[in-house]
Image (cartoon, rainbow, N blue to C red; front, side, top):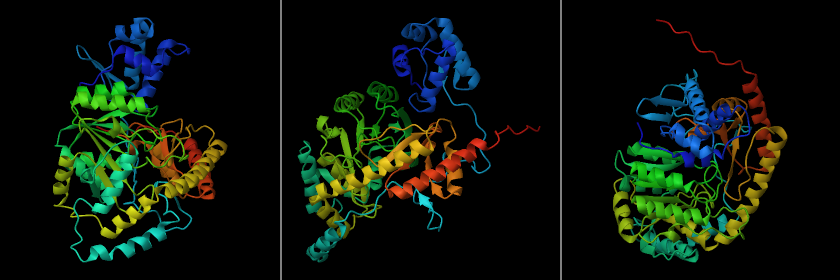
Length: 488
């Protein structure tokens, strides 16, 4: 069993105290179950002893005992004499459409193309089109290309001119950076995979947010990492993350502190400083994904300092990308790290990726030189889409809960019942693709959430919500599933 545990005072803080509902034991059981289902309390976490939780909550031990008993009856807690009690999920029967071994939440990603139907709406992809100055940037890059075409075209670390512009961008944000600390990659996913191949061995523990970017989870699984999730639906609990790093002896922690994908949360500066300190004490690398960092809906708003600004020991490794701010077709990303690790990464990429395309790098350089124009245009478009999507949800699906993020590209909507995968399946039949919550997690929770990007035009987003509302009614009106009879 996992060695993860949560203390009585910490669980009491996660619960937010004692509910006013009665009976108290039933309300307590319901609150703990909610923490498990939305990912804030990881599976296989040892719960505090009954007397410790009772003392922390100021209730009788009998109340806590009854709550644990109910959770055991419902399948959310298992216990063994002498070993304590720990969180689990009840066993479920797979639907006929879900083959054994399939990823939770069904198909997602661009590897599963949308139907060849002009009326189909794809909300599975959070990537906008190119900005209006894209053509000018391409023309400038093509004019620059002859300077490079007489050489071999292979620059494993990336073009020096692009690395200089990227380094200058970090310096402007308060993180002095030299070009030899930058490695240009073929997108952010390539950057993360390269880091995983270089820093992680099979069996190493890696702390991940829940929910988080699903392709990062895929890269870690292929590497054989042991995934240790920490819930961020309500923001970051640095104490819980620090405990997870320490208890699991984590080699790495992967975080998206800027308009987190998919929740849209923005990590406060104090939490950033505390998280870096926790990584230092746990001797773990902190890989911070800044793919969404430039996507504030108010470009003039003060920016939170980069995670790397709190690092003095080279433990913070930063990933950046052109795909969200500029265009998904520009497969250019980068890694900022120490110069020695940058050299290791350049050598590590050679067996499977010699270098990134020169023309794409030149286009990204031109766009970075005009990045404030791109940020302003993107902010205006995303804010318009966000408000249109939120308005349609409030009108047509008033039971769904969500918070309006100050940046990023998606709403993280809570349906109110653990039927996200069923809703996604029904929605696809009705002509709209959404991604169900379990895709963004490690262990099957988040079944009452869906991610809804707002990169499409407002009229299209409203039509998508109309179809989602029909899908919800279809799921709600379906007969309740009955267990299959057992034959011996």
